[in-house]
Image (cartoon, rainbow, N blue to C red; front, side, top):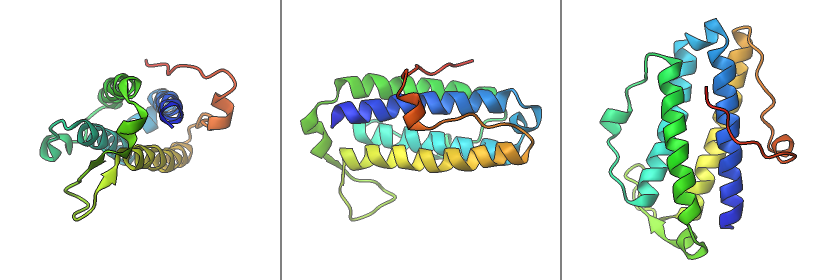
Length: 159
């Protein structure tokens, strides 16, 4: 199952980078506060679960500030996804059943595998919202489908 999560996160990084590139290249979208806020929400969810699963500190107060530019968001995505890949490469099957507790879900123990699935599904849903917003602003969202990515499994392109 670790291999599947590694693959899902590789696709996620590729899809995020491709979507962010499309937004960067569209003037209205790159300046759109609603889009930046949604992209920031996705990033913070990544960071929250990554930190929780690794037992690292996470400051919701610091993290809640939405960057003023799309370029700052891209930098945050790239750094976070590099951290995710490094951690996932060290992850082993028994790690997936270890549990964590979230201050946002009191009285629940969440298995690492559940947290990883949450990141993947949460991001997928919000990427669709971002693509819709990009189209509303006159841009053209890229094809981000997992099944299309599987053919060549390209790495993310960060600009």
